[in-house]
Image (cartoon, rainbow over all chains, first blue to last red; front, side, top):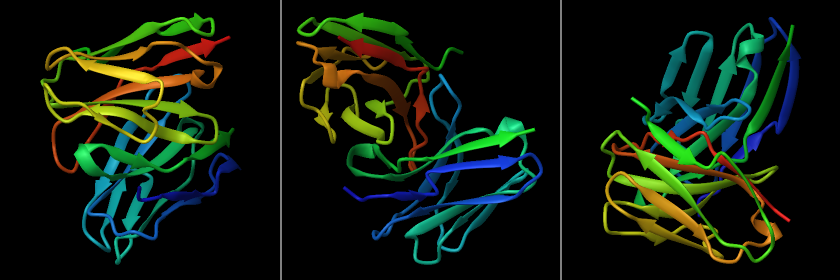
Length: 110
Length: 112
């Protein structure tokens, strides 16, 4: 099993602040995905990155895939309370399933 | 378009009881998955079905069985529930590479 380590585990910030969360592995991945999970719901895909060095933007969220395809980061600019949730990174494994990191739990307070 | 549906939403069992968690998807996806989510442990794969007629074990299959009833439905059975199986169970489906997985809302199971 290819392990994905996410940091920090918890993050509590005020509205308007910037933040970055990380997803690291010792293994090379063909792609990495980021999901967001809100309380009481299932995870929802935010983005897939497939090329080393790739940067993707989704409104105030910026995702980067490391050049060696072993790590990824998610940067949120001017966080809002609606960004609160659990952020999960995931990489492919055999049988089209995914290996998930343990997640970063983000709380944004007004 | 309902996506992935799961039943029941909540369940309380006594140790030793059995139950089946139901999952259905209406997106014509080939692959379906069962995960469990526990605090501090993330999502862990229990079983998956890459296509209709096939099932394979994931990371934590002990104590569970699955059935891919048809292309739409994938059920998870606990034959003799144990307190260690208290968790939130998510079903997911996917069809493309890289695999975008679509998750159901989850089943919250408490085993006493």
